[in-house]
Amino acid sequence: MGPEILLPIALKLKQMYQNVLKQDNKENERFLLLPSQWRYFRYEDLDFADFSAGTEVKEQVFERYEFAIYTNTICEEGSSFELNPDRLLWNEFKRLISECITASSLILSSDESKELENIETFLNSPVNTTDFGTTSIISAYNSINSKISSVRALYFSEKNQFEVEIVDPNDPDWIERKKLWDNFEKKEIMQEILTWENKLVQEGKKAEVETKLALKESIYKRNGFATLRQELKSKLEDFSLSVPDTLMDYFYTDYSPPVFKENEPWYKISLTKNEINSLLNQMPDTLKNTHSNEIMILNQQEDIESLTFEYNFSKVIRGWFSFDFLKSKYWKTSQSTIVSDGNIPSKGLIPSYVDKIYAVRKVKVTRKKTSASGPTLMASPKVLVFAKPIKREISPAIRIVTDSRTTVIDHRTNVTDHRTNVTDHRTIEKPDIHVEKKEPKEALAKIKGWRKINMASTSKVNKSVMFNPTLVEQIQSNKTELINDEYKFDGIVIVALECKRVPKSPDPDPSLKWD
Image (cartoon, rainbow, N blue to C red):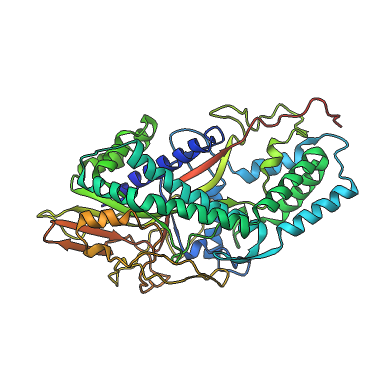
């Protein structure tokens, strides 16, 4: 088994979030791209909490550089996402901030300046939350909103699968899972959405935050653009960093909520053989051309009966960037520069940019037992090569645990966020189920009700040892003639990117006076 198994997983996530965009009427604002090459990151590479340029080893700083390069490549609507170090968001944005012409008389009054200070003070005030510990009000608001989006995505995916696009109503596995959806999971997900929405009101201060943000936007729209531009100039200087002992510069980029950690509960999805085939058959021709090799290999894997995986997503955070600046009507360029023409697909210097990243981990493939069945190997996912590589002690290949055999058990334990030293008290209110020892039909039915899980702890691999991922666990059932192959990576694989379109820009207001 190779990285081709990630293709139907990516297609499933794309399908799920296209449904969400459609439900939210945001199809004209956003779109999803699958990368032409799957990008792997270790958990430790994505732990940005204690970042301090110049004090960390070169290897750790380089990983932050790679993350920044990857997530700041400017998106082009098309068949797939392609890394392009020559088209980076910070280069174009910094040039626009430096060279743009602003309308005259855009100066804040003393009252407006004081009001903005009060807004910032409120948004950054500490608040205690059930799931994210003590954090700022605006961080709590954003993190809870992200959770709501994630659960709603799962709801629409399941509803679409069991109530709209029925792949095979005679499939016994589908029938069992449909019963679980109707009798248990549908109500459970809707209750979870309601719980998060209540937390948004109580802990995320929904009413107050949205009022403050609207007022802030109103002030900036009226006459605060000059201040915004000056702030961005300062931030571009503050967030500009470099990899020690190299000529590689980058702008610090983070993500929120901080879900890309080994002990963080993720969402779990399963796909039947029919669903996998349906996803592959419905692929647009542009994607089929890009992933033709993976499709060919998957079509030859006739023994695959189902697969399960964990997924999560997070928003890319750029302290030096402002979408409001790009869509503002208070600036223009001295030349006929087109940042975005506002069309679909859009063209220009910054037609769209990566707003969220979607990642997977812990893939389990259930396949038929054959005479040739034995430990299968998963080749390393394709890892991107950057334009200016440096000498590294560790090659960017996948690293996994091979000296322990894990069992997928929900221990219903509290999850500790080691990044902030805050205990996450979320618990899973479901009875323990040892999935691998169930009969396949029962296991598949149960899996759909399991979205957040914890893995049993495993011994760690020495940081200096990295190699291709091999089989972590293989469980055979003589009764069912099925084999479960489980692959656990010491990290995540990015399989989709949500891109945000930039409206027509620049789009100056002709009624304003210009210097």
